[in-house]
Length: 220
Image 1 (cartoon, one colour):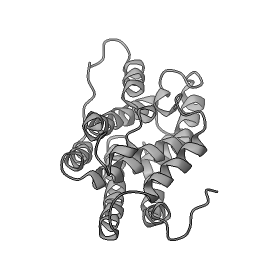
Image 2: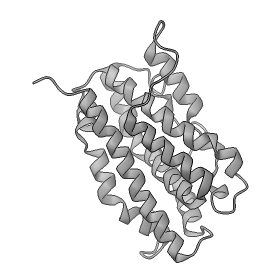
Image 3: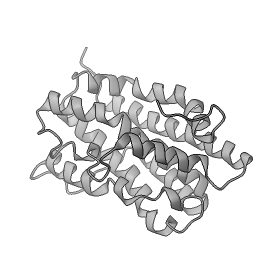
């Protein structure tokens, strides 16, 4: 376990969003997907939705790199868009549409990320944290299940989004990321706002999973 004091900001932001984190992980869609009860089309559709969120995050990265609050978190080794695009090309196959399409819930999520990136660096950090550390951690479960359920090559096309080749030691990386959170250059009131935005990020993600569950209901 990472050693952080109970009152550190990294501990606060993690504990404050724990319930919503669990809610997202145990959503009906995610449970059915990880349980092998949905087909590869559902996995591909989920991957499409991720593209929109990460496009919103990473299209702002260069501009925010010099920002005193968000800048320290801009780490190219985290960037996911190239891997997502390679996965989508593989998952869609030849003859399919050239671009992914967003669910309304996904558009709302991506729009909020862009709004924070444009006007509120602290809010951008909240979304950055919930996405990248979540996929660096729990995303590995999805990768493993996808490889076993649909026969993707280990760490190959279809699951490259979850393969962080530029991060050889994820545990050490996450420890360093949380140290950055603890040193974030904002006051206590702003930290509370960041925590609230973190909760909002999880709620937006859960809304996407709920919409996917409606699109891919299990047969009775």
